[in-house]
Length: 309
Length: 309
Ligand SMILES: [Zn+2]
Ligand SMILES: [Zn+2]
Image 1 (cartoon, rainbow over the protein chains, first blue to last red):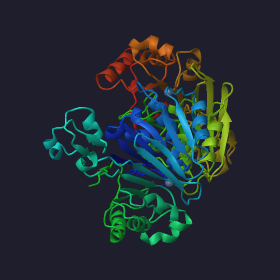
Image 2: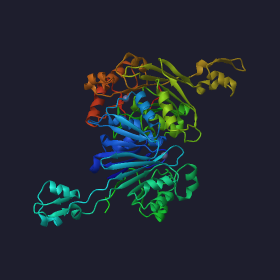
Image 3: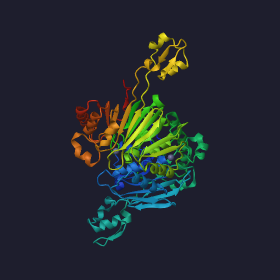
């Protein structure tokens, strides 16, 4: 499980940062990549990575502002030209389906794979498959904007073969039952309880993605104990009023959420183009005073989401 | 008058070339820039130039395929954020207006300047203002596609002050009349004819832009005696059948047109991503055998359109 930031700038592209998009790479887990937002030229950024478009199976759209969606028609078109492409699902606010369909219809683009649209209308679970769940809640932006919480299922502990060795359990169904934590009776009448021979369960990981929003209570529900919180930080600490007026967040608001939710790591993104050089360093410093495990993401930065203890 | 190629690749962006867009810079003539097509990330390419978006006052769209239009919503939005922006006109096939308006409406983008749409429905003169005319004709592509011929008005010759010196014409209205080629009578009764004191008239320049099309007669009407012909060359000479099947042109078809129309210079663009390195050189060689003054345009290439005579 890895994050790759494809665009980290708010509003308009700058020379150093593209507009919003984030890839959650679940290659080891599902052999899939999920995208969060798709600003213009996301497919161009992907050309600079080793991401293959056909691996992208889900795109989550936080809200319909242009810097978060104008890359969709091009990316969907180009994905058609890769061999053996499977279906793709787009989760987003009302309007996304019309935007995509109008763009593809007027450009006479033929898409070689099925696209399914899931319109976000109320908070709750929107994905539950193969060990992953995704929850969404409405945030507080000028237009409807949604945050996302990706939850990996816990994994059972591994069977401790060393501890089991003295019982000489034959290969086969008995071992399988023990692995699942069930009770078995051996040929000599010994009764073993699988639970006694399992290592510690591995907690699944949680990744929370919060794009454009003011500070609002639903963020903390989505970010609670996340391993990784990706949070917009359009402005630095000194611009609280501007952030509020424009329905955005400051780096310190993001850090306060990270601290309150006891997340593992905070990545700041969707940063105004003005924060470069010393101003960018200062933004990180402000956030780290509140939550030390903070990183300001740059375009094409990759971060592994570590497996918990 | 200068051309700046913003994207020269057909179909999808590659690492080296972006999808189609071309700037005709009329800064000395009109203090304006006109764009031909606007593929995705055209605004990103412009970030790498010294073009200011507010100088772009006209956008001509050849046809509605995605690689020629998906950059419009983003470019129009970003143009709004530059101070003091005037109106902009988009000339293009039916559908462009709906694509742009749907994109802006769903993304809740507020545009700070008026956008006028001119739908191309039949060939003819579509622009006539301040010494420039633009003509369009339908080409032969899978969907309606339009070529453009930009014609600069001829300029009257300059007043030959040396030749006029002996007559001691006073500064003022008399000189103005002579400049316009009119007859005047001096105080001493001498009659002078302005036409006798004017240098040679300067022929206006002609720039023709031919995007996606098969070889078809309307191209030659648009390109006749053009100073510069910009012509798509999706394929090289060996792929005539492929070009025909996909409604595109080869480099040699473009060169044959350039030769037949006696143009000044041919620029090849909209080249398939496969033509890099030796294959690109070979494409140029094939074209130059037919029309020597041929250049294969690369992204961000700039070419002055020389004043005739
Ligand atoms: Zn945004
Ligand atoms: Zn094309």
